[in-house]
Image 1 (cartoon, each protein chain N blue to C red):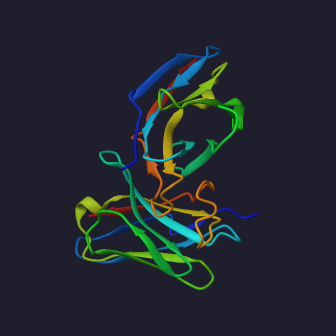
Image 2 (cartoon, rainbow over the protein chains, first blue to last red; image 1 turned 60 degrees about the vertical axis):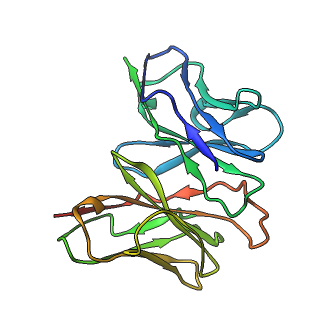
Length: 115
Length: 118
């Protein structure tokens, strides 16, 4: 069965500093990996995804993520955090080899960027 | 291009009542899935529909049901509401085919329907 872990409930970072939100996954086949962001009282917005190819994926709002197969990780990063990046971030995985499986989301990590 | 549209955005129901939530996917998207989001349980998958057929179902009681119409619009229904059903219900759509191609296609979410059961 596929699963996603986000080991940190909360991440605090000062504005202008780099940020990392961690995600590890487990699938039996090749993973499709996604990051979404949720602002208060809103739905989830797509940030980026890894399907195949370069391990470093660039997405919206200056975010990027690095796929590491050996560590089964897909950490979200941004070189310089903004206060407006404060939100709830979800990592999700889908197993390429099990099309019948749905997307599995992690529990979410709340990012607070302090001015 | 319009995004995923969910109605109503907010509603309050009484225990024992039923509720129907509606979702219109992005034009051209044939797969619609539903999720329940609560502070305690996070995002939980309810079901996914493609071409009017339920493809996947999460671990929810039979009080939760859904359907999809020929225009890909979807509805979900919760009968005999309980206090614990209070949640944000999210609909998501993606471009998909019946052959399995497009497993990596992104799902796009609507703004959600906030249900409060009193």
